[in-house]
Image (cartoon, rainbow, N blue to C red; front, side, top):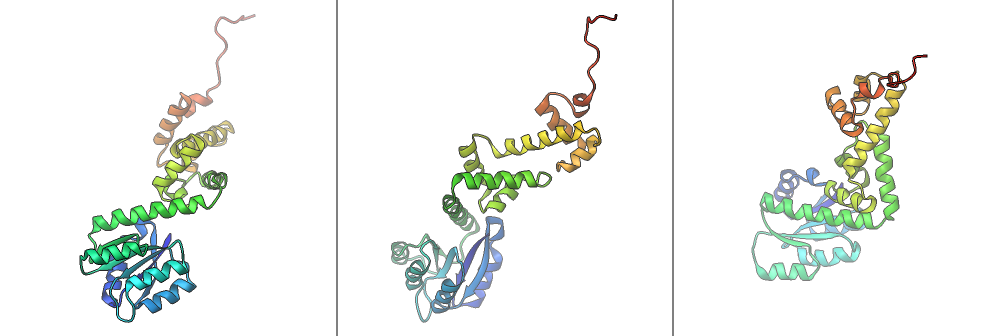
Length: 245
């Protein structure tokens, strides 16, 4: 989860912004709130903050001044300015100081989702780029292999700090394989090994690999191997046309 700092001199507005918008769904958590630019600067100096969401007009220091100082303290922080006024001059100055966006209060839900979805993708890309591609891919593979029962695109993305959409593209570009195909292949290979032991029933293997019911597992197995789990294990009969002695 990426950490957000909300700054507004009105407690009611801070609380509403923190509670109303779907932060967790988009990969964010409201890590802190501040009532002034001064308080916000103290938080930025002491805590890891990924996104600063600040009112543009506050007593004792404007959001514009805060935006400028914030980027000096944390060069990679994404700054989003809030204002009750739709003034071109404010927006122009905010963007000049490095703000990622300028929103009029209260932001429409669609506008909020679009903006923070884009910010999440940017942060994912920056975080992924900070690690060697082999290391990130290895982490994705290791997580998936160790969590075959519950693994999914969403859980793998959360494990490595990416959005599902970005992980899907990232993994495919670096391995030549879709993540869903990779997960399916691991599950089918594990299924074949378990069934070959002849100690596991089809229903047990289905549960072990996270399928909701044996029918779904059998269908996936047949699509992959060309035969059902039971057909796959059926002993081969005598060769046709062979000598009977």
